[in-house]
Image 1 (cartoon, rainbow, N blue to C red):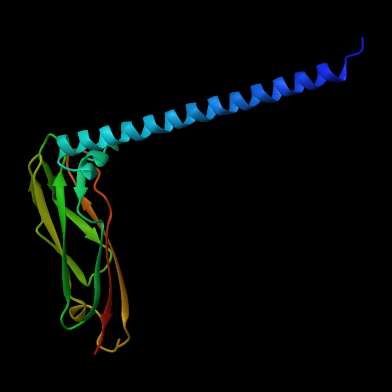
Image 2 (cartoon, rainbow, N blue to C red):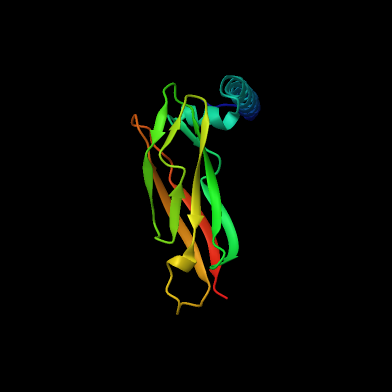
Amino acid sequence: MSTSPIATTEHKLTSSGLRRRHSQSILRLLTCFGACIVAINIVAAAYGYLRYDSVAAAYHMVRGERVLIDESVKELGTFRASDGAETAFRITNLSPVPIEVPGGTISCGCAVLKGLPLRIAPGDSGVVQVCVAPATYVKAESREDFVLDLEIVLFGTHSIRMPQLKVLGTIRYD
């Protein structure tokens, strides 16, 4: 059985045409799928905003986090050791029960936590302050600028997982 060159060419044209149409169908399907994903995300963000007052709060709830921190890293900039510096972390309770923050640890003795113990009702916020006073802690003969990188771990009740906090800055000794 021999096939004629004309039949072979028609078969190739038909086959490539089918492949082209198949590719276009797949492309349309993927475009539609992508549009659906975008629409779902928009609806989820709108629901989160309406239900939890912000998209960020909704995101934390979906991830199982029941505590929202305004910013987990605070930058103090450069400050003189004799002046010290302060910053505050706003903690919002997203859980349906009150939480307590009885205390925490900080990675340097030059800083202290203020505002603890803290009790936060459902949906409310509280503030924990970090006060850095290096002049009272660092030896007097140390006169070089010191890069501050504090790690703070707060303890929570009701098996609430508290995010780790950081305070960054540079201490200048004049």
